[in-house]
Image 1 (cartoon, one colour):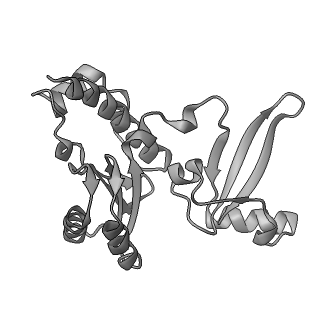
Image 2: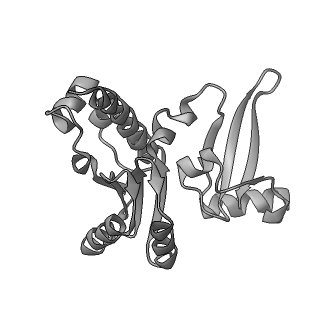
Length: 209
């Protein structure tokens, strides 16, 4: 194993764990073994020769409460992600009737890949994360408060209770790292629970923009 591979295996082990935690936190069914897999087992499964075979990291999960809501997670081999892998992923999604995908790329996302993603936005939703962004699960940091996405009914109840228009709520951008982690869409409301020395806990609500 060369020096690059010696760094690659533990790096992708962490990335793989974070993306499974992310899917679990979004309400998808994820096996406990994926969340607790030790480094040695990860290496045996995905890098028996020393270099990680990223194609073996691809997985498909479904929502706990809605089996029809599925999402693919892809790990392309290319350092610079171009159009060809995106087209290949679309073909796989079409064949399995899946509309959502997450792509974990190594270093660069080409402008051509971004363009084709925009062209397919009406039919397919792709999210892109750089490997380095998933080395650590930011939501597990002690300074990051608990975030929970409200259902449409919970959102309506909230607005009715406080006699608010949604535009009166504080905002969170959909480019915010925590918003991206949870896959927040524009118009969704997230409940944020913070610890408070005086009140025990402090609730705030933010509208994704």
